[in-house]
Amino acid sequence: MEEESDIRRWDELIPDALGLIFRNLSLREILTVIPRVCKSWDEAVKGPYCWQEIDIGEWSDQWPEHLDRMLEILIRRSCGSLRKLCVFGLQNDRLLSFIAEHAGSLQTLQLIRSEISDSLVEEIAGRFSTLTFLDVSCCNKMGSRALEAIGKNCKSLVGLCRNMHPLTTAGKLSQDEEAHAIATTMPKLKHLEMAYHLLSTKSVLEILSCCPELELLDLRGCWHVELNVKFLKEKFPKLRVLGPVVVDYCRYYEMNECDDYSDYDESSDGTWDDEGGLEELEVRFYEGFGEHPEYGWPTSP
Image 1 (tube, rainbow, N blue to C red):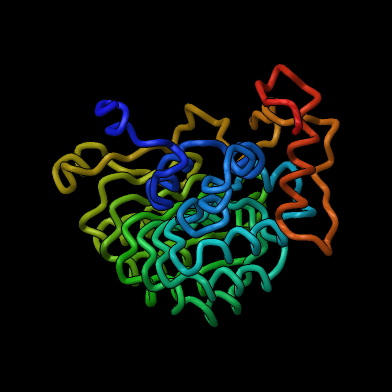
Image 2: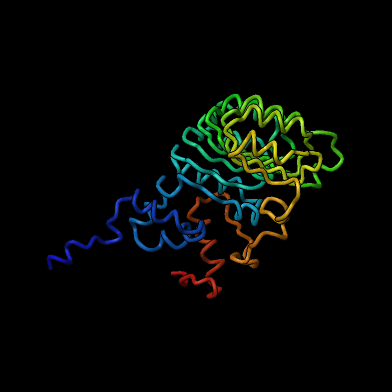
């Protein structure tokens, strides 16, 4: 009996411990399976402990028409404790403004393929002052003005991904202004990705001279850049440069056919009643996949 008393029941674990465990599960499992195990697990999922890190990148690609509502619900659940957010394809400035309002603790932000304007970023960049890593790859509406605002306000930024799709840069004259904005406002960068930018060698050298802590520079697809290997080894011995030759073209932000949505059920449209809460969304997720035993889901209660 004494040995049994030393074993703690799973449903008696404190919410923050449960949150740490549940974060290792997929979004689908957290929303549809965990709440049905027991009351304490349901309460843990509804609290902030599971939502300090929100990654709905693949989900937002699958059901973009419902992205706004899902994101708002999950961010509100974080109760100001959000540290990491990954989302693809924001379609309006309103949602980015909403993210900024809850960015007090945000350190990592990935907004790949989002409709972000220079003017809005200039307006709200100050609210992202805690950022250390930012991914704005394939955000075609923003440019040097937005990057400058980010650099001036995000003083702790050490990682920036600003990769582009080669088709979106075709026909443009130059993107050296973006390189200049990065060089003059982001001196602490250690990781910088600018694949498929129309950069000159001069602009890249400006980045190297102004960002002495750089450890990785991705220039794949930057065909106009010519860097002397011997010069780089002598002046920047800790720096690793990728490109301009492209070896692994297929990346998650580039081509839809490269993405793997095999975990999703194409027969489910992912919709829910706009008047209801996330509980209704959870039920629709659950029922949408419950008919397919290959996903390993329990039958709907």
